[in-house]
Length: 415
Ligand SMILES: Cc1ncc(COP(=O)(O)O)c(C=O)c1O
Image (cartoon, rainbow, N blue to C red):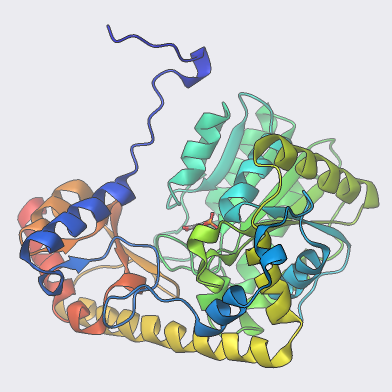
């Protein structure tokens, strides 16, 4: 037996990250035969048509021109005040919902998910999300002694599956007093799916019905990590208005991340925004999450927060960032359009893609398909129920022919 000095709860934990493993294999192959011969569709960051990691130029300019004090000083634990104000505009645009709200700075969107699980569920409780989900949700739940359960995200017609959500919500609330429901929209990872405004209304109604007249509570965690690549800026934010004045026993938390919108992935900056019709709930939200920040990472990245605040307080910088981002949004869209067209031509089924960094192909044996694709130097991420393709990282010229190769690998594996 191997020696273990770890605490009981920590024993046996190892982050076996399939995404980084797949990426590592692609990088090794590129080193061997040349990057131009390898299609690395594993990376969750924007690479341009030359395969270079993109940094929005104006973001880089603002970050690099900050005075030294702003680069090195501590920030307040709950975040720089000008950042916290600007983050509300970055999140909601002109669709700011009515109600009490507070923002707390976090280490990326991941930090929001961490604090939400820790502070709004108890040990042993269940957290709910859809069956297609971003793997770290499960890692975060497990690390804190919670269990992630899922409902089927899409019905047979590929519409959002509200009936499946309702069944699961009621099942969980029959066993526990509070429910944390995580929904990643718009431009969902890994499928590129977005809930419609009426789907969001359906989710809210479901939570209202399940908690009305009871002492049960629901926390709706909206993970909007990809909102800046989801479509027209104000159009994709309209659904936020539906969150106005919800009953007191429903708290909404929005997970904002600078990782994609500002191409600042490694700078680890985000914010959690709490929204409620009750002032006490929001005061508590600000207090307990600031406390958990102090107890987890203390304060976060000051220069990244200052960069966002500087951009949002200067209309010309903001419009420059938005037009630079729009250029890359269109670059990803062109890749998605070509993939979709070729997939249709060769009969490769995809899950409904609306926008975003990724699309997914449903499959019975995703790992075997990904292994087979290595023979033609294509690297993708095998998920439980399909193969994830990172459109954000694959130049248009390498998209050409890719659906047919995936279809051939699938036919071979599933024959
Ligand atoms: C669905 C989803 N949520 C949240 C995040 C959070 O990212 P970060 O912690 O870098 O802000 C990501 C990043 O890949 C993601 O894909």
